[in-house]
Image (cartoon, one colour):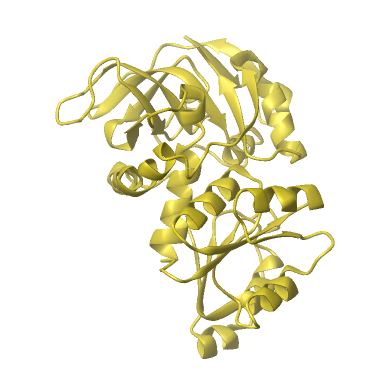
Amino acid sequence: MRAVAITEPGPADVLQIAERPAPQLKAGELLIKVHAAGINRPDVLQRLGKYAPPAGASDLPGLEVAGEIVDGDLAGTPFKLGDLVCALVQGGGYAEYCAAPAGQCLPLPAGLTALEGASLPENFFTVWSNVFDRCALADGETLLVQGGTSGIGVAAIQLAVALGHRVFATAGSDDKARACEALGAERGINYRTEDFVAVVKQLTGGRGVDVILDMVGGDYLPREIDCLADDGRIGVIAVQGGNKATLDVGQLLRRRLTVTGSTLRPRSVAFKAAIAARLQATVWPLIEAGKIKPVIYKTFPLDQASEGHALMEASTHIGKIMLQVA
């Protein structure tokens, strides 16, 4: 099969088309003939040599795919050969065939193309796990999304709004802030020209927000502590602003605040399968009803994956960057 390999750690042009054997399936896995795959920030970090795949995972980049089931261990699954699915994988998505645990596969939502379906798994698994499971965003609570025009940000805004929450989001330009509002955020905040703490406090009558989805870390964390309501929670999912922060622990104590973090990729199949079941029950109906829509910024053919990575690193996109494979 044709695949995109990382020839060595480095810039985007180290991604090269290679011939690889099709994946050897393990018990409980399905073989997907890939129609489309998503490009995500962890793929860029892996290419740079900063995010090694978990033990036993493919060394090929790519954490989400959509396509046709052509082989695998179908016993006990709701699937059959020929079904169109989208799947979260530990790696190997930038290829013509990809192995995926059956529990991490979801039926392609009705009305969506494979390209649109491939844009869903990484973002919605991550958002559900962190915003709704770990941070337990509850009825009537408010959410601040840092990086609202990223793939994860677009998913978080739409999902929280569809479930009835007030949502605020930060972005790096006025145009991007307005894009967040078009997705349903009550207010998009240009973090380059506005103080997100002051804006959120003003919009919430001084109370602050209940949950913050943070992809920045670093010096954002102490500001986010100031931005939280009492009993508020911060879910850290990336550290683009740095690994270290100084926190006022007294505020954590007095105001019963929680700072938590997680990475999804190394978690067990059982853990991810449980998220998949919740997505199918709660989120897939919202997608099929048109209340949540895939937002695809640009699509590249498989042999132009390096151009997709360059676009990701430029951070000018709104929504998902995708690969069309078949």
